[in-house]
Each structure stands twice: as structure tokens, then as C-alpha cells.
Length: 382
Image (cartoon, rainbow, N blue to C red; front, side):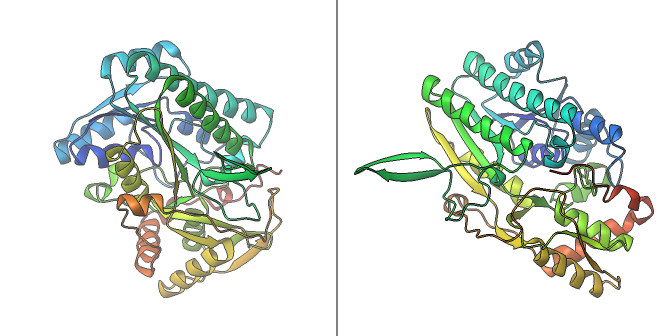
């Protein structure tokens, strides 16, 4: 297939591009380096430097023989989006192109407005471009499990059947986002559902949990192919942060009571899930929602696992409870369904001792580049 990856420079986008091209798809990537710019502005650059997209694509072609097309431009700009769609004519669009950080979205008015403007305008442009140029294409949109919040009932896979006054109907599962970033994801889903109903678009919405990991099958060929790896409070996911903190000798910072429970998945499983969704489209006029995670952990459980793995690696890892900068339930019920990808054939990569050891060993290679001052700055409190 011709696959267009929007946000192809990011932590998920770049590994997805390599993975799908290695499976024989014709892949184009588009990005405007928003995340790189925000990291520089907030002084929270990742653990190691990453090549720009053009140089990454050249390196990947030298190693794999697979060519990636690169487009650099702001996807809020309709002229840029329409030109990419007209020229490439994608059969599938993988949409990662959003400001990806909940803490960043809550920093201040400027960050909030950037998040709203970027995330909603890019999604709208994707919808309009698909409708105008490739109406039969399949949109795969990266959503988030954070859309659901932490309700005191089981979380279904996107939809819920309601009986009211003797009548039944199926609705989108009620959402209760915990940040502005997550709220924009809710709005994305509503926009997509509207245009599925009105224009017959074909959409898969992936409600993904926090991702961890560094390596995929493709990145192991050369360190220049590694994805972004943030370890700061703004852009770093919790397990990635904990691994870097363990290597740096910085106490693992547990927010509040540490009972916050979420569904997690390895970076390699994100790639597998996107490929399975691509290979099994839902059909015209359908909005398919899949909960994308493999295991659930509390923050305390993750911290304890990293502490144990660090001890085996000869590291002295301590835990420290800090004031929670977020407005969230620290102890709650959490039972989300996730059977959709199992039905499509997902073979999960579970969080094992070997995986944690491998992450620790890779971070140790960059130990001298860790700046402890960038780990926890209390940037956003809500």
C-alpha cells in the first residue's frame, strides 16, 4: 500500500515508517519538527540527538534498500496538506501529527492554544484531504486511553450499549479526559465519527496507552535509526523516565500515592498494532475503535520493577513520593477491555526482566548525556 505517516519524525512515527517499509509498503513521512522545537524551547532535549528526517531516510535506504519519501511542512497549512495528498495519493493515512504531551498542554495559555490549534486543525485537514482526494483511503488515527479517564465501571472498547426507558442503542463510550491534550483527542474522535456518518469515511481510532521502549527490530541496525527518547516530565513517558532516573542515580519520582493505573505497551507492539490495523481495514463508513495496550500497571508497580531491574544491574535505585502536579485520582478502579487486537492476531511483547535490562543497558551507553535538572521541573500543575 501507499502509506502516508503524518508526524513521521516522532517517537512513534519514525519507527512506524521503517517497520511498514520493511513489510513492503510504499511509505511517505511528513513532519514540521514541532516536537523538536518545543523541546528546545523548554530546554528538555532528548537523551541523544536524532538525525533529521532526510538523513534518517538516507541511512534507512542504505541499510534496508527501502526508500522513504520525506515531506517537511506544517500540516496546519491546507496548501501543504493538499499538495502531499495530491502527489502521493495515499491508500492509508497514519495520523500521529499532534502535540503529544499532556503536561505541556497544561503549562500555560500559550501551550494550551498551540495544542488546540495544532491538534484539531491537523485532524480537520486530514479529514478534508481524504474526503477530497482519496475518499476510499483508510485513516488510522492515534487516540489515547486517556480519553476514557478512570470511570468506576469497566471500560469497553470504544462503544457501549445503553438501555434507557425500555429502549437500547450503541454510543461512543463516555469520555472524561484528564488534560487539555487528552481533551483534543476526544474532539478528534468526535470529528472523525461525524465525517464517518456524514461522508462515509473509513477510520480506525487507536486508544493507545503509554508506550515504553527504545529498540525495535529496525532500530538495531544502527544507532542513527533510534527514535526520540525523552526522559523529562513534559515529553517523557513514565517508564522511560524511570529507567533514565535509575541510571542517573536520581530517585524514581512517584506522583502522590502512586496508585494511578494505566494500560501500557512496548514500542514494538505499537508498530505491530498499526500494521495489523492497516492490513485489516474496517470498511467504508465505519469507525472502528481499538484499545491499544497489552498490560496494566500502577505507577508503584512500574517503579518497583525498575528498582528490581536496576538492583540486578548493580544500580542503587531509590523511590521518592512527590506532590502530584496533576489533578487525577491516585487510587481508582481500572478494568479496560482490549480484545480487538488479540482477535486481529497481536502477539504481545510483555514487560519482562530482559526488556527492562535491555533498556537500562542502552541508557547506560548515554549516561554522560543525562542532565538530572531536566528530569523533574514541576512544569505544569493542574
